[in-house]
Length: 391
Image (cartoon, rainbow, N blue to C red; front, side, top):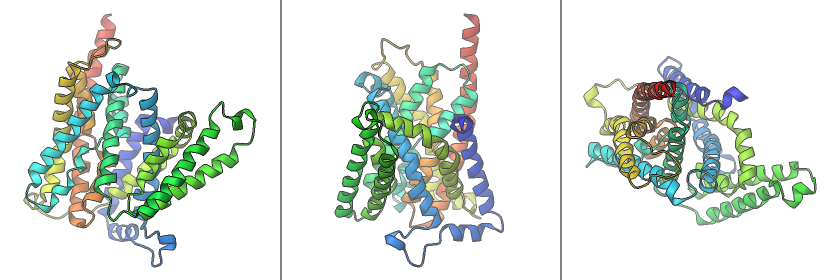
């Protein structure tokens, strides 16, 4: 399982799954496969009217957001976001990396019904960004990785809030209440697995607690789905309410399955679009907005905001990030991929043509960001290796 936890492996598998999905969709098998993934059941059991593609994006992807929330909680409690001084720089940089891409997208789509897709280029894919840094960044100081991780976690927090508030329709308060009850129970039961809890000290079997957590987690997801809130939010809530130490162990156990199954399946499913047979000038403004906003908007937003914040948010106990280091993180921030693909599906779900064009724009824009990041990270890593050798 060790190699599946590797950031390099996770990034490579994600890219491979997306390429395979795009290839399959553009072969003779494509239309049948796409129809199968979009097919809804004749009778929706328990109100779960979900196609296979929705089971992946609404169900399995909740596991990924669960792990993101656990990581976010750790950073907030004992990591690089547990004080204002630590969180100031990545927070301001993350804000710039959200605002500038959104503004660029709105410039392309102003005056059209497509302007509602502004959240699509605001996300950063944690797994992919860290994977590219791991592959090409041998020699880059740990502080750069820590800054990237904190920024990406905050970026995904913004994405979670956007999903919760902008893509929720006809919320059913009674089911939100049920989800809150089961999530609270999940959090309380998880505390029984803390190292010094009476249950653990009494050497009682842990499997009943684990079974109860699984049941409460599934019920929280189910009630969240019925409430009209996007079901992946259930994963976020469960990750935030879970006790920190059991949450860390759970993250360690589930991470290989998220890297090896959940994210590749979602990348394969989301990338399964037929390349539209239209001229370049026939592509929608949303396509161009996403294509430019992801690599360019993230680069400008994170660099400018991070550079400005570094002057006021430098910590005395840690060397300051230099402008080239911030540029490295800004380039990596343009890799939207997983979360951007999800945002694209939510933003343009009523127009399949625009959804497909948006998917292609996310893939191409993220691909450009990957290529640029590979060059920039390699050059910066070579600089640090030379410094180390000189010393």
